[in-house]
Image 1 (cartoon, rainbow, N blue to C red):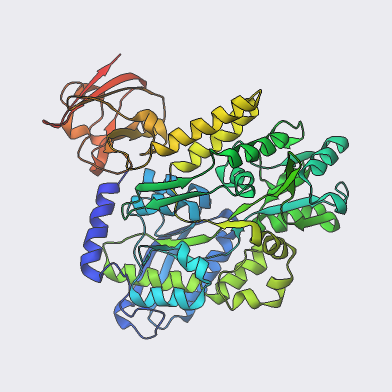
Image 2 (cartoon, helix red, strand yellow; image 1 turned 120 degrees about the vertical axis):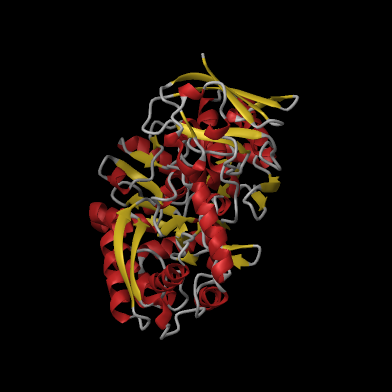
Length: 517
């Protein structure tokens, strides 16, 4: 578990061997005999495309001119879960993986993305829309490959329930659902990604400055503002409706929903349920104090990453495979099979892509969409709480308190110092300030509840970082309470039993003491 130390050492070795580029020829050029051979790899992709990905890798094996063969194990891992699973056990992670754009900062911070060489980077720039290129770029360097340009959302609706003339009004949509005994599915209590749509509608922004280590160094956020209060009041209309369901699953239409806010990836499943009653269009407007506000959205991308390797030839071969899997042909195959919208400029011009109802809907929403830039990985959990707190509010003061709480938590992330006890107990969130150690004269202390789980481990790290030198090897008092061998190469403190523990670290001596309470 938690093989981050070995992982970062691998990255350092690779940087020295191949200038972090992972390719000897710089692109998809032919005849690189030095790469010939068979490589065992693990590939993480969404369950919906596991079979297609295997087919595409087989095609690469049969057509590449470098003599490269991949013996690939394809595993189903959702794009939104990639960062958490990868950070939890880097050694067991996929060598190639598809992830949602909002995972980019966390993966960079963990050293989990191999930088592209000049040739591969130029291939990406030449063949994808500029916004997709920006999504894989940090400080003028590329760390991934665009897979789709449709990682945004719009509105699906059941035309047998929702009249066409009501689709532009949130209030009318809520009324239609309530009158028909149907549901309105939108993730307002479980996803900041969707919740932000109301704030973007009133002109709010949340713009982060992220440094090379993935740390937030500055923030321009106006969610807690008069405009943010308007947004929250509009959102509360849906939150308070008995029709609201905090979900974005296509299957909701089978469970009684008449409206679903989701993306193109759900198109085929929604079509299978609704058939000719499928409606798809941009998000509606909501009204506050006589003014209408068109709901915004995030406009992002699905991306492909390559995990750093110690074997320079394997690294180069993986980059060639990633270029193939994100090229025009493979992007069109994913569109044809799962309606994933291409980022490749040529594939976007395909007649079937241009005529797809899901693609039309996301294009209608595009003028109201906010490009998803680099965001602190901790923001997603902070912002999604707004939904619960606004729903619980009984008056405008309560709504304002929710926004104030959000603002304070965001501000606490900027240039954050101190130390966090990161581990199984907080989902390996190294920016979780609820697990920050209290400091007194260079002595840092925290008391935590360790619940029973398969791996009850973690370590003390610099907030938002992944330090490995404050762990099991530094424990003096309380060494009998931990399993040193289970900590592995990452020096993790693995508790033998669940319970309540006080952990104290003295900075000057780098000594850790553990007491079970």
